[in-house]
Length: 198
Image (cartoon, rainbow, N blue to C red):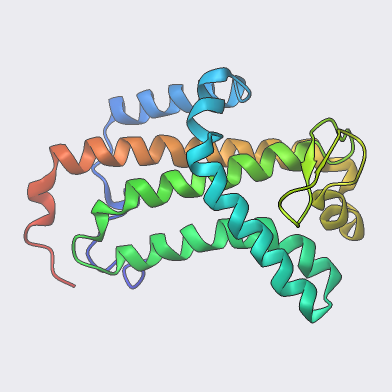
């Protein structure tokens, strides 16, 4: 881990005390039991985060569609949405002072996981309206199958769509909490990072 985080800036290296674990654990339990609450929906699924994630999703589809790899075409949308902030998180950890980017990147990662979880959990039910890859055409709920049907079905996991979707949403809550906690931690422990060298 030291090679991925030479300045020891990630939450793994935080000085975790009883109360910080207790508070975060309680918030994580609350978030996971209220996964579709209006508060989480506003925080993790709003126009400011939806638009860049949506554009990444659709452009990734188009790239892989050109290559003709059908399964990758469907998987690439959510895959690239999640991979970009994840790679940037690891990249920021390799920069001295990269911790300042961590809360924003972890929040971005949380939003992509939450969006993926919502659509994954809806794979069989098809209750959500979908937008075509032309980014203009909208389909009524149930009119077309979503990406997650084509991702999970070949893997034999379609019957587990709700479970997988909720796991993704639980991961989103975790990363949202870590993003918020990181802001507080970096603010109150700035002296911890002044003397770190790789």
